[in-house]
Every structure is written in structure tokens, then in C-alpha cells.
Length: 368
Ligand SMILES: *Cc1c(COP(=O)(O)O)cnc(C)c1O
Image (spheres, rainbow, N blue to C red):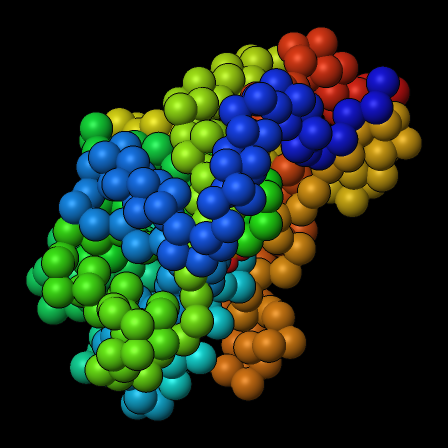
């Protein structure tokens, strides 16, 4: 058997006619930027998540940058962010001229350990970025309470958390503003880069819309400087065509996760993913913790199974953050996770036999 880590071709084949129609319609209308599909997608996404405003952007990193840039930070300011994440949630802080203050991961859920936050808050702290890592809700309600108490701006990175829920509420609705990614491999993916900002704050929404369009809401009316980060019309049309499938796709991911976990829970050499109580995990990534991770990865590859590591180095250990002079011991959980996590294939089109084969090979690796 050959099992790729992700299979976007299979997804396209299943939804070929609505996608082809969306692309054709966009080409015929030929309004490639600011086309009607962009505002249609923004409305549809706002309705789905349950927020007042969505602002479509070029990608999620720009969305995070736009939100943070609005705070007018300087080199004396600090922003709290997880040590174990994709680089976007840290690099935007430095790009805004402030200092990233990393928080170690929670040993079970891998999201930032919310109990460690208050110790890191100083007079310099201006904001917290929480990441719903892998699709696990990041304890957004308690972080939101910490932010209110300490007068901090709260941002959620929802790049991996389309329809993740905490206490019956979707990720993206707990903060002042949240950023979503529609990178092709995400639970809702475009056919190129795309992202968006969601917020209930009208003033902030207008500012974000201006910022991503050279500081102008109306052509040539540049009331401020901004950047160029807009979602292409063709990506919006594709996302609109895919949006009706998102719930069903997430349900399939969830069933796959259950099958993996049922199959692997007795295997003492690995730890299956933990799901926080009162939450719905979007299972963007199904990551196990594994003994002899790299050898297991090699063995699976030899048996036709492609896996990934999210992430092979926690952020404080990356060359990009050497200037902060952190040591691995400062973030013991994140530093252990980087050597132990292994992401198994998970996508709606994955077949049950494939999951069973992967689990069988994992057990064989440890017991042959
Ligand atoms: C994918 C991802 C991003 C970046 O999204 P882009 O749209 O590629 O900019 C940010 N944060 C996390 C956690 C991600 O997984």
C-alpha cells in the first residue's frame, strides 16, 4: 500500500464540477481582485463561525501581522506566544518591532500551557497570541479571562482550527480578533495562499480592511499606509464552493481520529492525542508521541506510509530566535515534543483499511 500524507487530488476529483464552475465563472467575469466572490465568501464565513466581520487576506500570516500591527508596538513591548507552533505566531511579533515571549506547551494537549501565562506577564506585555495547535482548542476561555484581567489584547491563530469548538463556541470567537489560513492543506484550503481575519469589532474590521489594501477603503483614498494582502477572487470562489463540505470533512477527520486511537491506545510505546474536555478537535493534524520517533518514521516510509513532523524544532530552538538566548531546558515540554511527535495521514478521503494498515505497521515496528 502507498499512503500519502495528504491527497488533494482525491479531494478535487470528488468536488470537480462545483470547483470547475467556480473557476470558469471567475475567469469569464475577469475581476481578479475585489471580485464579488470575495465579499460573498466573507459573509458566508462570518455566518459559519458566528462573527460580525470577516476580512479576506492574502494568507494567515498577513492576517496575524495586520492585527498585531494595529497595536503600534515598539521594542519595549512584549507579546506572549506558544513555544511550540508554526513560526507565523512568533515572527509577526518581531516584524511589528516587539519581543516574542514564549510559553511552554501543555504536556497533554500540546497547546500553550495557560497556567504558565500569568508568571510571564509584565508591565511590557501588550498582547497574547494563542494557537489552536493541530485543531485542539487552546483553552481560549481562560486566556480570554487573563487578558481581560490584565488589559491585554487577545489574538487567536485559527490556521488549524476551522470549526474547532470550546464549550460550544467556535475557535475565533473568543478573542479581539482571530486569523484563519486557507493554505491548500488546511481543513478548508484554497488552491494557493489565502487567509482571513475575523472580529466582532466594527472599528477594527474597517482598519484591517484598509491596512490590507494600501490603507484605502475606496480606491486612491489612502488615509494611512498599509500593505497589499487581499484574497484573490479565484481563491474566494474556490473557497465558497468548498465551504458547504467543511462540516462533513471535519466529521470524517474525527471518525478517522477515533479509529486510529481505538486501534493504537494499547500500544505502550506511543501516546495517542489527548482531546481537552468540552471541546471539539478539528483534527487538522493527528500527532502521536512516539518512542524512537525517527526510526518509526523511516520504517513507515519503507512500508509506503508518508508521515510528517509538526514541528522538528520548537520555536525558541530555531536559529531565527537564537538572539533571545533561550536554552532547551527553558521549555522542557516543547523541547521533548520536537523529538517525539509524529503526524499520521489524516484527511477526509483516507480509507479505513489504510488507517488499519498504518496502525498494524506501527505495532509491527515495536514488536517484531
Ligand atoms: C499554516 C499556519 C499559519 C500560516 O498560514 P499561512 O496562510 O500559510 O500564512 C499560521 N499558523 C499556524 C498554526 C499554521 O498552521
